[in-house]
Length: 312
Ligand code: FAD
Ligand code: EPU
Image (cartoon, rainbow, N blue to C red; front, side):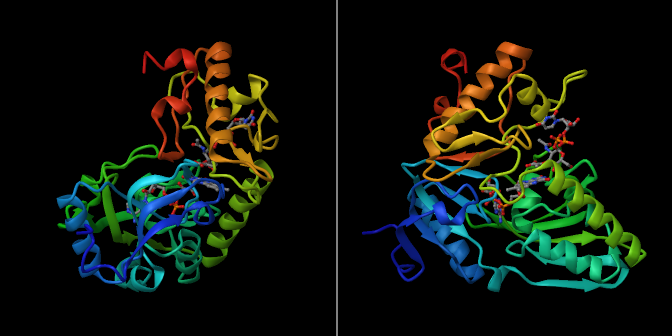
């Protein structure tokens, strides 16, 4: 008996994921589903849990490296048609579905004369992943505007957490290994002209300093939060790695913390380049870089320099 019996019309086998990520590399999900109803989502989760099928959630794939050999288990993607509703109520309260695009939400709240999310201008991906990653940058993070987050545990049980229990920190939260379905945000009324000015300034700066149109997943590594240690981009740049290449994977000459894919790049090219960057930055600066990009389907050693593999 197949584990997803009763859900056959929702589950595809061997669904290629490359086209669903911005690196546009990588293999297939063993099982893939876009559940349109809460009952289908929780039913699939409960069945997967009972049969020990690993579950992952995919957003817009803008922070993701999928191995060429693909991923075992079930990949779920929340369709915008069912999980993308946004609504504003009094007092600056906004409800947003996890399947909505973050960029669309930022523009929509700005158009309502609400301030709080303009700091997220230019960050691609979904609202659900932005919450899980606590997406943001120098101007702020989404966690600061969150009131509550709703979703489903991986065993199918619903949750509804206040922001104080979401553990928002620098590119982390306690929403990992949960399926976020929506959130309630608290924003404030603000002068529309000022909100628009801020959005234009942020996107202008991002376009100047980041390869926004290239096939990338944003910054590969987190900035080390150590006193006196420079940003990951600066460490990689000053280690002389701009334009370093493995196959079709290249350290961006625009921003060294972005690996961009060209032509026939494969996920293994990106993984090998990541290991080289870590090695060289460690040799040059004595810093072990930690990944921000999520890697699916890899043996953790594949993303580490050879010397670290036994120690890790
Ligand atoms: P995915 O890449 O699909 O998934 C990322 C993670 O979120 C995975 O672990 C996935 O399982 C999880 N996830 C996805 N959906 C859900 C859900 N509903 N519930 C629970 N978990 C979920 N990031 C920043 O923070 N700041 C930036 O300035 C920034 N700039 C970028 C610029 C470019 C050009 C690019 C390509 C990326 C940039 N990023 C930035 C990275 C990326 O956009 C963010 O991490 C974004 O939040 C990922 O959204 P996504 O929907 O694409 O998630
Ligand atoms: N720098 C270099 N060389 C480079 C890149 C950067 O010397 O190739 C220097 C810059 O000149 C600057 C410093 O490093 O002095 C920091 O660079 P930048 O201002 O570009 O910011 P960042 O720390 O590299 C962070 C986030 C970005 C976010 C920006 C702007 C991380 C890992 N990255 O980048 O987020 O867009 O701030 O808010 O926290 C992402 O997470 O994917 C991402 C793109």
